[in-house]
Image 1 (cartoon, helix red, strand yellow):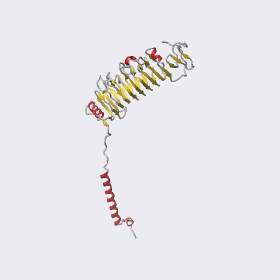
Image 2 (cartoon, helix red, strand yellow):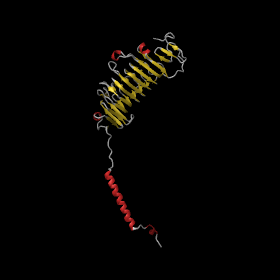
Image 3 (cartoon, rainbow, N blue to C red):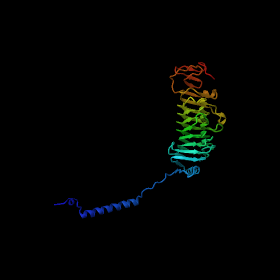
Image 4 (cartoon, helix red, strand yellow):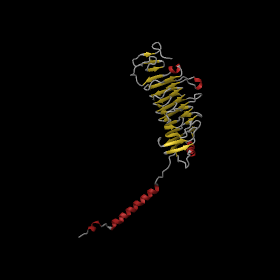
Length: 348
């Protein structure tokens, strides 16, 4: 009679064969491991990750990273945190990128001066996914580009606050600002300029795009001297003037609140190059918050065209200021009535 343990007895030759197989597999694994070693984590070529300084001033650390990346072009990357500095120089082909706009803050600590000053001709400079703040409440700009010509500069998904002014680009060629929030947190004292393109004297620029940006608590949300400026879906609150244009500007689907008291849109004469080029505005989808447009002269009014967001309203009670599709000094209301010279006199 066999015992229970007899049913599980393993022959000795099986043990020898099994041991041999284990040794063979171990040898194969050792050879593979030697030939294909375990990869070590490495940095991405062209990226420099900023590490916070042991002190409370990260200026030297950030600037060293910018200067290093500028040699070949690439990204200066900021992990989550607050990085305090006393002024940075932005260079061509450098992208300052944070992990997220809500978790990375570059805080300028001085009471005067600019947060980031761009070197001359800073082609392809970019900022994205971070906040530029000024705990010192400086009277300067968050980003200032005044030297040379600024080509293909991009600011995207960024917040600029605490600075009296946001972004100044003196000679903008193909510059874009997208999905940014610019302004102050003290609504009782609107001051400063959110975005300014051109210096109003001898430089203005061309090919400027402002898209999906929010402006708050400013004297003027946008001031542009650029020829060919597109402003798409701006939101403007607690500002005296929403958009002041001295060039040729198209504004698509703007939203203004009632506190924009001086002008939603101010169309003023061109002062660049002796004012030889005309100015004008194309407003598409405008009118939900009133008709607060200010013109520098009759010429600017004649060169502006307003297409409202809707035509299901009456021409208005004031015959001198009818509502409808405006083409210079001609207004066509929802009933097809033409208000113009020789029909109904418009105010000068």
